[in-house]
Length: 319
Image (tube, rainbow, N blue to C red; front, side):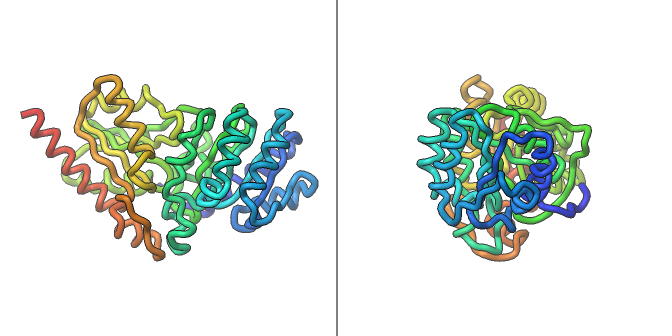
């Protein structure tokens, strides 16, 4: 890992401008926070294709549905907490039901918006949007994956929800990596336990894996950047190798990736010790990002404890 110089929200929007030079068919709608999501860069480059719809997210998504009704790609942009709640009926009924070509730039995912408090922390978004038929859900961890996922979202038919982060954290990918719907990357090989994660929690997971390596524990870390659909093949191969799995996500424990992973494994009768790191039916406070993570059990320290506990169960089952 190396320190990032830009957040995923900026990398996504910068690539949007580059992509827009050669692809003139898509338009961008913004909910009056374009300087925060960086979509103002697209508006400056292509003012006739950029529309500030004001603080009216449901109307914005409904407008996007109308524009997309003839197949035109439309990007709508706001904070994740507002897209996944204020605009939820428009998203479900007017975009997902007719399977329209609308892409959601959803910034400030999870408690990455720590300093802004619970009102701006999108900690239920994955559960809400992933429940909609036809919706694909992606979450890049760094600026390289964010830029590549901009292309992927626009080149994928139908609605795509992309969860982005508030602040720059770390970089782990280079241009040699490719991304796809239903894909993932094993970002650290291991043999004792599988750690499945996405977004900012990739970095906490890698840190936890390094801490456990000092104790002789080998952790395999999967960046499950495609949250819907998940990469079942990579997940199953890893779990069969390690015999235990932990999901770590910056989200409520209910109905996120921590639902999708064990649900799939249970369906195919793959029974292994399982633990889940996430918000435990609680809102988070406003504060420093790393301190908020630790206070709510999402930090590398907390992941380490969960892995050790899960491995203890694994050892007990084997004896």
